[in-house]
Amino acid sequence: MKTNLSFSSPAQIECECLAVVVLDGGEANQPKPQLQATDEAIIQAAQEVTSSGETSGKLFETVMLHRPQGLNCKRLLLVGGGSAKSFSAYELRKVAGTAVRFLKPKGIRSLACLAPTVSSGPADAVKSIAEGALVGDFDPDFYKSDRKKQQVESLTVIMPADSDRTALEKALTQGRIMGESQILTRDLVNEPSNRMTPSNLADRAKRMADEVGLQCEVFGAEKMRELKMGAFLSVAQGSEEEPRLILLRYEPKGAPKTPVIALVGKGITFDTGGISIKPAEGMEKMKYDMAGGATMLGAMAAIALLRPNVRVIAIVCATENMPSGKAQKPGDVQIAMSGKSIEVINTDAEGRLVLADGLHWARELGATHLIDAATLTGAVVVALGHVNAGVFANDDAMYARFAQAQERAGEKMWRLPLDGEYQEQLRSNIADLANVGGRWGGAINAAMFLKEFVGDTPWIHLDIAGTAWVDENKPWIAKGPSGIALRSIVEFVCDMGMYPES
Ligand code: BES
Ligand code: ZN
Ligand code: ZN
Image (cartoon, rainbow, N blue to C red):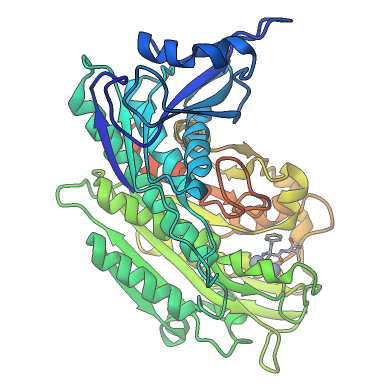
């Protein structure tokens, strides 16, 4: 999708479709839709619809007018943004996505969007429209033989003539980079496991690194044995597919030696559960168990293009989790890279095993801040459903900065606790740790397990099991991979690049 800005009068703009936001004024008994436009010609063109009650400004409501009088666009699309009181950049992203998804199947390829006012300012409005439009433009139907090319090819964001044009151009570029990187992540997650093996994922990482100018190293089982990654290797040993340890480095010239932010992703390209095998129903979805790894690859692509002044490394632990004659069995004891011994009570709790070694290695490579993302537990879905991702942190200062970044990114996450009392759940009779706790608080137990491998390094853990996959088509996003967490992580990294000390 090409993105550009226009500072012309919206009535003059020639385009296939001009989208304008309508908000719900919220007056009882008398719906008062508020058109987010000051241009008299647009207000006139929309007048009949806004006064007839055909639109109320309800979130995601769409009304399309053809050949609107007095305007140069072929169509005028009114998109509801919900309550005027609560409208923000968060809703604006979704509104932009809704406009794109409304137009896509109709063969309309270019969209101009009149930016509404949001409290986070005009630059954030421009960035959010670009992000949201790109999120809406992705569909996961690559393997349908009758797939039609339905992308909206051009997006024009319309801003007032007296805007700070340089700032808005920058914001548009940022939004486009974020949105495109999120599409890269979703594209990787969408691939089925026969086409996205650990080696395929590593190849895609290399290709991306070449394109954006990152250093990329890919290692196999031999190197992992050298590093003594016994926990990661124990998951990989059951599979015919070779595991891959992917390392990306972003080291901009002139960046301070510290901080070094490490992004560690769970890259299980298929999770059968191993010998503790999962039920058949729904197992096909476990191709998305590499979403954490794909998030980190997409985040690194964005970081390489946005060029924050901070060092970042990314580690993706890629393997399948398979049952076989060589697979690890419940009760096996493994020695992690850190030297800790782990009794593997359940081979389906494999994500924490690969991450234990990934996190430890990140610290050995000099990480001062750790962020991991993983589709780690079914329990986080029970706790938070499909709306909020679970976030855990061992450092309140890092959490506070991350929470701000996540707010700017417009992604929903909810902090869960890491109290010491939970630790006893992971006690093993014969080893330092068991890889599962009891039945209750499963997302916390998994996080407590990871905590054993991060030492005193400030760390954020994102459990995205409930949010990395959208189960139903929504007006603003297709059913399938969501690309959650990428934007929050990139916002955090960019902020660290600007203010490394605070
Ligand atoms: N990949 C799964 C977690 C998962 C579940 C992701 C549902 C997405 C949707 C993970 O490896 C797993 O199987 N976890 C187990 C842990 C349990 C054995 C302690 C789980 O959540 O059931
Ligand atoms: Zn599992
Ligand atoms: Zn898993």
